[in-house]
Length: 360
Image (cartoon, rainbow, N blue to C red; front, side, top):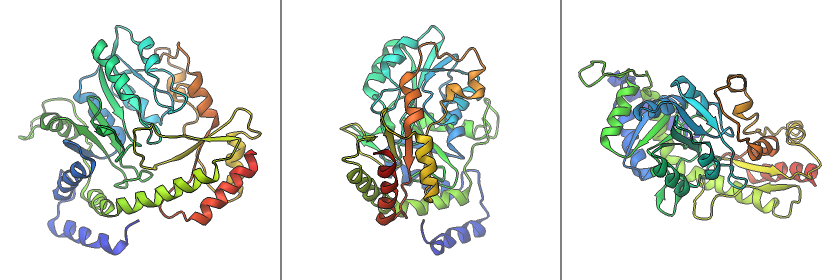
């Protein structure tokens, strides 16, 4: 976290100018600095990642069925349902745990209008294959890129893919504004549309032109984001050291597998997921409890699958007819270990010691 003293001048400026929200100067400055840092043409910063997903869906005027993955956070499918859309869950690839393009193809129906693909743990989807399928079937593509702040592939920012990409700036993310999110837009016109939806659907004259949300980010959060950006490279370097230490410790482990980004991707080291092998003598639940006893908090991202949660399990229109066996296995066997800039290498090794002792 940046030193508290560095935040005080921002708060004093907000106090002096009395601009607390409604696209104030700090929000506009944050959008400009994020454009440069991320290497994207336009970005709309909003109140959180969920409303950013909803604004993106509304901007593209999507209807009917949207193909997505059950191996993701609840916000992905919740945003679809709040927009009156039907999520259709398909399986994930075993290596990246991102949506399997072959399963997308099999799930397309006359009611399918879009694909909402999820970059998982900062590991990217097969964007080229998804684009080929979407173009052939005339489908829109939205990327839930909540985990992919700053990630690049061999063509630049991964946020350039699809019709729109959506980020989360929640407090758990590598870059955060306490709560926050963003829609990465390919043109100024689309950005203006997103901004209008985020402001109750009102145009510049204050006249309602369409249904909108109150999705504006306040100035206090925007100021925190500006301060975070100053320390972000330092934070990422710390995360990289932790990631490297974990991988070195687990390089000869027989009970677990460390997930890897695609060969052409950079990483933002946002999560450190391990996959327990089928023959591992301990389950992810048991390992999590052992870590808790050692004072370590690990997370079972993502358990249970969205398709098994009550809002979706009980609704017949949500299709899982093709099955999601890979996602089901991942949900049972993946555990995310702590990774954050303040985690020292001594504690990384202590965590690794518990994992190795329990899984070998």
